[in-house]
Length: 255
Image (cartoon, rainbow, N blue to C red):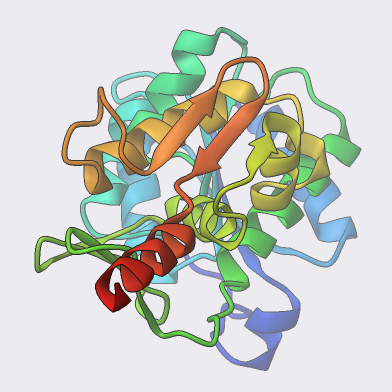
């Protein structure tokens, strides 16, 4: 049952609606109390199917989703949600392995919190994820042509690869935009993580590796032999200096 306070107007903007999904009542109570103290509105679900239905009906601003649930676990629930919604999702898990994090990111999760967690960490992560999804400013150039193979549409958050439009996830778009803005320069891993995710994520290298792989699959002719996004081992990532290449080509044509 949805609370009467659920709305999509000015209240929704100032008090985001969070769906908390967990089969343990004490976890839901802990999360609800701490989020409501910070001004968030909270609704709850106790299993995967109920969560999917709540996402459809209530259209929350963010979902906090437990991994270990009976019948349908968090990964399966997330896959069902991603079939119809891009709502940001934070996974809750008792395990802190890189394999689990990558699996969640592959399924479309935006972040991970490992149990037990503090109220401060919970609220910080929620705010960081919401911030990433709400601020995607457009540069002066609506469509930027990198070369004959790749263009980037900053208004729609899409890339155009050999004439075909491909939608990027918000996080993929943020990474690509940040790399393009610093084309030709190696961006340290921690700097890129901070700019895209926030300071709290400066050491979360698995996140960055996973999303760089996503981007390469979408924009690179051969992801195993990158043309655009290079990894300077031990240092960071660098986007090809396409503007320098364009200037060089122009000079060659003049000659």
